[in-house]
Amino acid sequence: MAPESKLVDIDLGIALQSMALKAIEMGLNTLMIGAFNREKLCAAFDLPYEPLMLLAVGKGAERIELVPTDAAAPRAYYRRDGVHYVPKVRLNDLIINHA
Image (cartoon, rainbow, N blue to C red; front, side):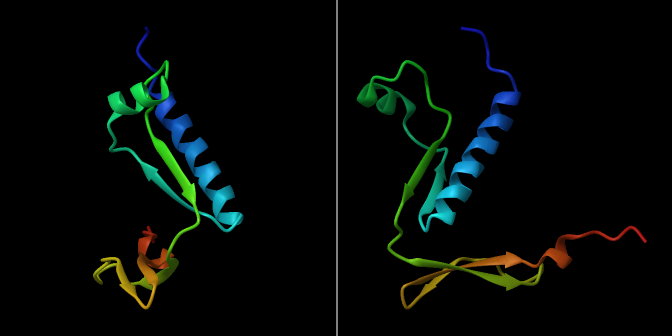
């Protein structure tokens, strides 16, 4: 078998993100999984090729809420009252001005 092209990883990322965004639009949750036992998965499902990533899709037990934060602030995820809070750096803090 020929080695895969570097473009496979780019195509994979685009495909996974597209599927994840559609699932989220439909009110579902997603999780991209790269750390899994490929040999066991191939054996369990009789797969002819080794999978590169998994995309788990389903209804989450928790509500996820993005929390805007400063670039220097801690970004550890936390849970409170059944809500999973995910701190995200504000866009303006990520943009580098070359003035």
